View 1 (cartoon, rainbow, N blue to C red):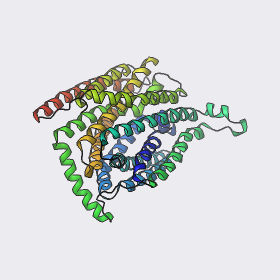
View 2: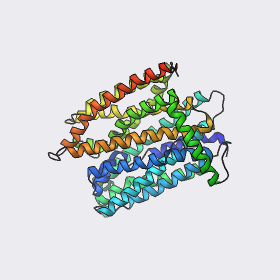
View 3: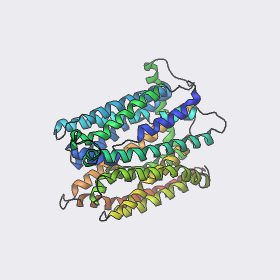
View 4: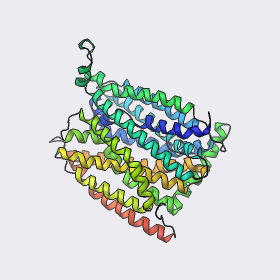
Length: 432
């Protein structure tokens, strides 16, 4: 196996790791197990806090101990987290909540281990000549394959979750219960996790300065973590990229984790959730092309401004949540994650050297998950502050309040970012 095969393995890993069949029913999966919406949002906070604690140490370990080793670990943790969810006891009270907490902890550890290591391994496996252009192509391939994976995963996940649909295609003697059907999307993702283990075991570590022992790696990781974090938050370019990116991401990603509750609120049938996710996957297939052209034509700050404007339109559209037409602004809102991810990856990889690339990407991931966890906590408290009756009013109220929060925060940061870059004599020009 040669290092040149790493980018292709990265593409397949990204697709199988991220296109998960339970995503279209993520919120209601936990609710139907017996959790409340407040508990579910709290689980997301636990997930984000886990990533926050381990994101940067894992990235530094990837740069010092080995990126392949971190990716294999991430895949094994994915197997463990899916196993927890697959066997979680329905209506199990505190036992159910404890198993779900374990699932979120394992998921957070897996995300932390994979974050940064996968991109860094693939990026440094490319030839140095015209590496930025080659990375654009690899990133576009990864996003397109992930979109295709989403199409199949979302359709299958939505259909498999509905026992009526499952029993319609099975012989009458094989009829399954709702509880059994609700585990099928999770079982499919468990198979994907096992394939991810095989893919990561086949990856080849680039020739970078890795320590032979874990003890030396931990010492080197600590030094690299501190120096890299200081560099990211004192270098004007990386500071602006990370801060503005996390402000947009935390609001949009929070909605992405509760979207099935929103779909239920606007009275969409559950069988349609998978097809909605598949439609988002199809939209995601064209996002890399549009995002690449947008980043080549405009500077990074302009791209951030465009993404923020589109996200604001989507947030305004979903705020009332009183009509099925609210599906379209919801879909518009979630497509901004693809544009933001492409822009962030391109900008940070351009600004970062090879020796600490995974650590920088992990610092970004840490900041993003700190922001996401904080916003999720605030969103949970906001939901709890509204009356629970009539049904859905608490979620509607929270969605309404996030619009001014997003507008004031993000557009204020865009103004600050331009001022910061001008003061430092730095400017992201077109294609930069």
